[in-house]
Length: 438
Ligand code: PMP
Image 1: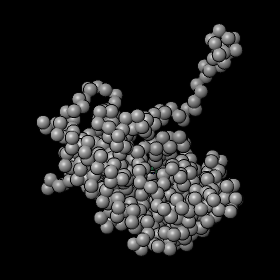
Image 2: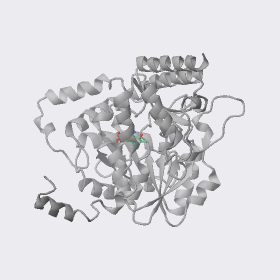
Image 3: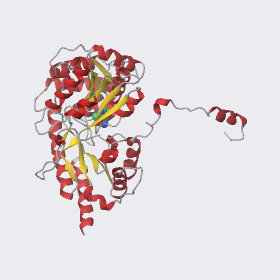
Image 4: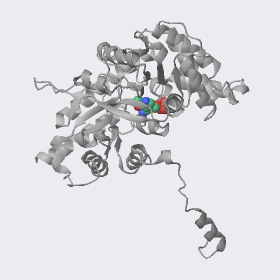
């Protein structure tokens, strides 16, 4: 429409009102939009966004194909909005085992469009205008805008690094909460705390003691817990994933969030869930039924079959939930050696498929720009993908605006990758190091 057209003038004149809702102010930037595009444009080796480049297990993809080609045409139609009955049933059975309590598939489980929508539903359902929500830094970045969109105020508490004195590599276990600092964040205004164990991006697996401390404070201050456990099966070195909902006083105040994408290495399927008490889930269902209402039936049916298999093989060596962490631990060790070998000091993760590494020794390659708005690690990650072809994510993306500038010497790498991908990364790092020293 040309500007001279009087209709267009009228349309433009109408646009003087702000078009966006106030709750979107300040949350328009998104790290993934920018870095996924950079990786697609420049990367030879993508260790950025968190997804495997190896196939999902055969039993899962075969289930999907069987369902697609099978005779039940009703699996192409809507199913129960709060979760396909076979999936909520098997999830309830599985979590009964994990939590040691009886669950009702109809009231204690809701199926969502990935863990992302599970988080969104929980924040919308449980957080009100003026409520404070405690978020432990570094954190999966969407928690902050989701709390804000619900009208809440995020209150941040950091994991503080304590480097080991013996010159050993740091572990994610060396990043800890200061108990007094954590306690100081709880007040009458606190509605909920978000706990993400194993934690993205550090790979920290919270200990029973740490979770016990959080649980005590939740009970004392009558605070809810949004427990993001999407990496529950990805735990290494014999560590145990503790479910905070199983600690005393926590079941009634906790929503557990999970993801078939992470669990079965099929992030594109976008099947997730919330498990918890009906008193909380009834409100999660209200948001779900008034937003997406429903997730793809076939994907839900295939995930249900995947869980039925895993229930049968629970704890056995053939179980995918036993095999996947074993394979990933090898990949972790491989990337740790590779990064350590070139002086990009890795922090050894106890869980997840992410690894954070210190880039301080490579800073001379990418000069800092004083007084820039852009944190140094952003600039470094952009330079690295454009000049070296390796995509990674700046760690400061997982910090609040106020604390970003304290953590600009680190990158997050994803190691859920084929051997060939990790090898290609190693080759690039080796060459880079040689160029630096020659
Ligand atoms: N929580 C965490 C901690 C995550 O890392 C992710 C994915 N990166 C999600 C939730 C979202 O999971 P999904 O892909 O199932 O939506």
